[in-house]
Image (cartoon, rainbow, N blue to C red; front, top):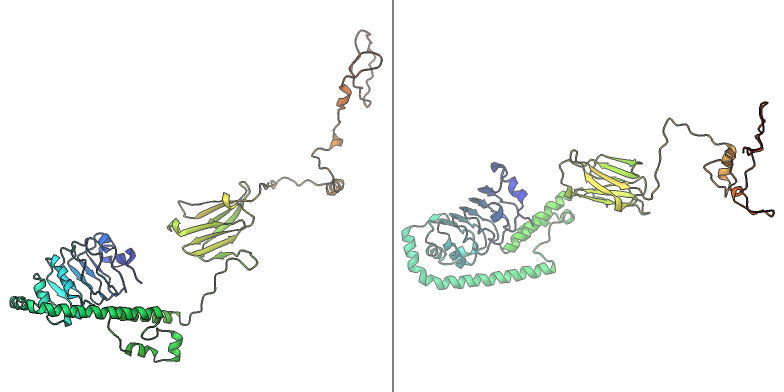
Length: 434
């Protein structure tokens, strides 16, 4: 099903510098459109609208086009004339080769006072006896009907015959409505059973039976909205089969191996740089995404062992050199280059320190290596053999058996002896030096 989109309208508004708010004419013919929408909101200044040769079943969403003068809906699936009361400026309406069978719906065009031309050629209602006279009398503002000018004398004669034609026209319209209900029921039954008038186009069957395509188009069927839709689906299937002819089916996309190991994938073919920042203890991914691309078209997923970025439906996945914390990861884009910068903190609190390049590496002795590798050996940062230890227990006061407590004095080091000089005189009143 094809929808009317803003991009579709802008592509057909090149003559208006692709501006749709001030657009006065647009052609949307042969687009397989199945619904009229958005035009009454986006293009309110439209004066000419071409929608012929589509699959439109209803006239809708046109009431706000106050300036619309010409509406072409030829070769569609319209069955009832409706929803044109708001088109105050409508002058010409083309409904050639549709399925308008309710002739009474023509009365709704009375609210279009400027309507002067109407085309209903190829509709079931044109086969009703008294069709032209009914339309001429019902729409007095008309000047042309089905390309033929309406003269004053013809209008007078139609008014005179209107009373005798009314009853017959009503019966013919009711008969058409009953026939259409039967056709819809039959089409619904076939659709529910998955049965069509002829098989749809399949390339393999065509190779087995070259006459399948000819039989589809030569098989008689009722000309109805359902048959038009079926023919359209047939052409779509045929085109799809021709496009897929000779193409190998794409292999399923594999992101993780059967063992659970993630793979490196770069479907969008983007340049990237993966580095480790020891100062912040993190892994940094710099992905060169398109500069002017909207951020909403990207999706970032960080796992402990890999990072995945989806860019416009294409997957970029890279295996990380160290395990990271997904909850602590931060993603932002550069305002100048547009690159995506993904900062992921390493798992654990261990920091890596770098040794200056000029500093020499200390050499270990064999005894130190043996002590380091000995099981249960204690690692000391200071060698106790290079320092003297002071015995703090000797300065604690203690009680002697001879008398009161006295302070214990430290004995002078035995390794040092003091020898008095020649002029030294020992004074007994002076206490000995420690």
